[in-house]
Every structure is written in C-alpha cells, then in structure tokens.
Image (tube, rainbow, N blue to C red; front, top):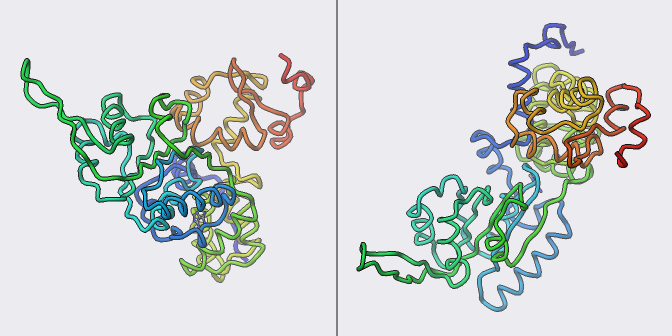
Length: 357
Ligand code: ADE
C-alpha cells in the first residue's frame, strides 16, 4: 500500500507554490506543447460546449456554401476552457491554417502589419489576450477586419501619404479572459462572440479518458470520476492532474489510476474534494479569518497571497465565484456560506443578510 510520509505532507511552502503553479489553469510553454499533442482536431473529437459547437457548425457550413471566410470570432471566458483548442478545430473544419500570436507580442505597428501581410487566403489569425492590444495595433486591425486592407503611411512631413493596401481575406479569432476590457469599436467588429462555459464533471471525465488513451495512462471509471470532480470545470486542470496522478500511480502503485490512488495523489498535491488548492483555501481563509468574511479589495487579497491581481482575477476567482464560495460586491470580495461550511467555520448570522448589506 502506498503511504504518504509526514515529510511529503509538510512540503515547504516553495514546493507547494511550484506544485500549484503546475496544476492551476495558467499556461506554460511546457504545457502548450503537451496540449498541442492531445488537442482535438475536429468537432467530433471535441467534448463539451455543445450549444456553442452547434452554432459554430451552422456558421461554418454557411460560410463554406457561400465560399467566403468565416466571420471574425471572439471567444471569452476563464483560462483553460479551450479557446485556443476550439479555434484550431474551427480552422480545421474550414479547411484553413491557423497562425497564433498574442496581443503583447504585437507591440509595434510593424508586428501587426507583418503578420497581416503574411497571411494566406482564408487563413485564421488567432490573437490571444486580445484585450491587451494597444491602440495603434487596434487601429491597424480595423480596416484589416472590415475591408481586408491596411493603411500604410509613407513619406515624411508635407509629402506624407496614406496608401491603402489590399490583404487576403482571413478570419480573426480573438481570445480574452476579460471581454469587458475590449474597446467598443474592436468588439463591434467581431461577427461571432461567444463565452466558453465551465465543463460538467461528465464532460471532464470523457476528456480525461480520451487524454489517457492518447498518453497511454491507465485509468478506471472511478479514478476518472474523482479527477473530473477535482478539476474545477476546466479541461486544462483535468489533464494536468491526470499527468501528475499517473506519475503517482506508476511510482507508488501498479500504474492504474483508481479512485484510491487518485485520492492519495490529490492529497499529496494539496487539492481537496472541490478541487480547491492551497491558494484558493488561503484566499477564503483570508476573507473569513482576517476580515470577518469581507468585503475585501482585490489589491489587499493579492498582496496578502503574494500573487498578482491578474492571476487572482483570471485564474482563481472565476471558479470560486461560479461554485458559490465567494461573491463580488462593489466594495470588494466576500466569503459566502459555502466557503464557511467547506472550511469548517460556523456561518455568522451577518451572512444571512449577505446580499442586503
Ligand atoms: N482536451 C482538452 N480539451 C478537450 C475537449 N474539449 N475535448 C476533447 N479533448 C480535450
């Protein structure tokens, strides 16, 4: 039987932080490579987001019938839900190639002009974190999106002229965790705008079984169910957990991921039955123990946890909000009854009037 030693249980804070960065929904280069290998290529292989898939299939079929590129698409939602994956599936279904970049990489006008001019007919251009696009890049993009042209300024002083240069027809896919931060004019130029939803445990279980078969990991039904329910509705987290738990099963057991092995491995990774990790629990404890349940400003939370505001807002909060552990109020974040119950605290009576104060 695999035994977790005290030494393993009380890992240093540094190791714990490294572990949670490996498991949370943030992307890393290593992970991008892993995700590319397991990424579904078609709608048939893509699990979940069924309503969105149906809508997209119709748009794709209509665009193909008209022999036109697909309208520009904007996907928004928390990280790890498959915005990149879905975009490459759509490009495949359209029989097109996809070029991927991210807004911070398009700092200079020549960056965005260069990429637009390098596109081949009907290519897809995927821009991640599109809310971070600077004003100049945005303005270069507008005629590109609308008329498939770019305006280039040539000459200096009085001889300055603007040349309108045609580019090929293409489809822009923008992805963002913050749809509200996109400028109005940019948002209005997307014909198709969709939010990606958290996945159900059943969908995550199917994703886990599919990934396990690709990476040759052995997993039984109950093992897959447990990992699915600990993955915070997020495929990226489910797949990361699968890899870590497979390692555990290979080293501490016979390689098969069962419910029992998964439970032990999750305990070692400090992930509880709701899929909350140390940072999630620290955040809830901070609200409850230090601030009487809140409200607490995001700056205070980030400083106390040693994380940046963006990570708290984009990575940790979306699931805590959706699972009803915290609520956002105009004065800051508050702990909800679920948080008190989950961490074993008595619910204060003030919580009963939660939404009225
Ligand atoms: N791997 C990651 N996300 C997936 C999805 N939605 N369907 C199938 N495999 C996946």
